[in-house]
Amino acid sequence: MTATTVSLATRPAVILVDDDPAVTHAVHFSFDLEGLDVRSFRDGESLLAAGDLPDTGCLVLDQNLPGMDGLALLECLRAVGVGLPAILITTNPRTVLRNRAAAAGVPIVEKPLLTDALLTTVHNALARQG
Image (cartoon, rainbow, N blue to C red; front, top):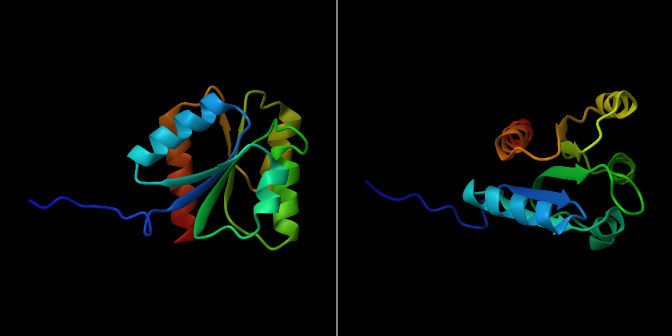
């Protein structure tokens, strides 16, 4: 039996935008175990300032970010031609937010995050990419 090694160059990449260090740490840890590469940002402005999104397969956006919210960030990204699948994470998925997310074609995963639920949603988004 041979071991399978996933190189960083071939690992699917996920962009995480969340201002909570505990969430960021937990997502990095869980996704790394799943063979996913995570690049994280604390807010939308930092992501937009970063420029190109190298080899990214999926966006995971917190709705309650400092500055612009997750759906506003997604709108900015779409306006500059970024068509990556996105997932919205939030602690408060009210009906209005659910309707906005549905109109944008974005699934919601509720906080506190259940790692399996988020990973399943990310894997589904990555499958649509590739």
